[in-house]
Length: 177
Image (spheres, rainbow, N blue to C red):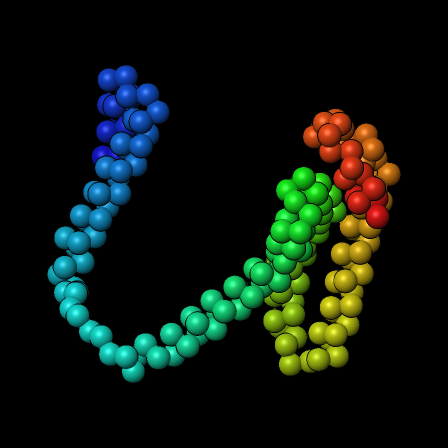
């Protein structure tokens, strides 16, 4: 309520878009202050630090960081190599082509994974069911993305010049391949 009052007041005083910013800042400050006042009765912060308690978290964090770092480089190594040896122009053409082809997967896969994950979690002990489910999920992904990719390949000579301009026409054969 206090944040809304500040936002409306700032807007009435010609605060412009900053009225929303001030309202949000005041809202956060008031919430934090209320949490401190109410929470202080039940809990007093104190310093507690032991390396022994952190060991598992650090091990997990380092593994997670290393895995993400390797995945990042694995996912971008083609960009690094093309940019380094063939230059920015070829890299740009490659990136446009790559994004046009990969985008359908990036839109469809999260939806299917969100549905499939709970189903797979319930059957996690039955490898045969998981194997069959993964196979079925792969078929659904292929059935959904293949027509989209075929449409992109068939119409790319129209959409690339319309969306990006004539200078990107070199990406058309890459997309079609």
